[in-house]
Image (cartoon, rainbow, N blue to C red; front, top):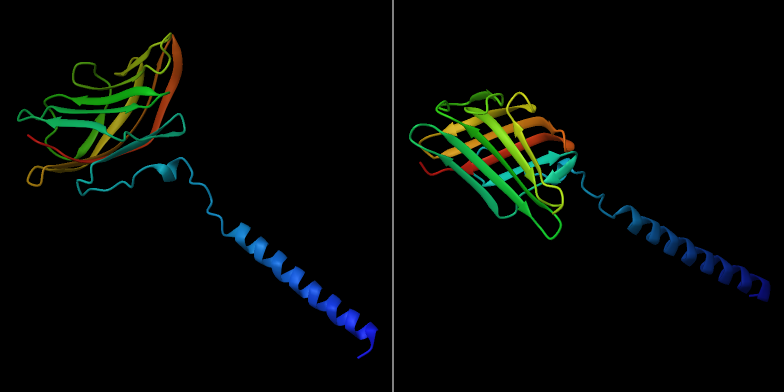
Length: 183
């Protein structure tokens, strides 16, 4: 074999190895998982008593990791409170439905004595932001999609917008919860 042929064979082999390596590297880059959207970070909207709660607050996933309290007493007073507390975020959110919840259905959050929600943000120690969703400083809806008094499961969805003169408007969308309750 002439030295010219040896050089061509070596060059071809080197070229093939380089192409293979580049293709492998490009393929690895394509396999990287796409980051989840804020909506994809929320728990699924289930009806099994999965002990989940989540929503988007101004477009950001809001998921309490350890504190969701729910009660539904014999008079069918419904109270749900959730909290997020990290080193930088301290917020709470709750719903209250008085003497009305006996089955699935929609509840307008428009009465500060019977059907309302509240949201509080204590993240900034110099500026406390509290909101009451009662028809005058916000509006919203709570939809109970499952209310099983035998298996003690309550599930639902919610959305609302609320404001006050001192703080930013809060938009809560894509809310969902699925909880067991104790009468």
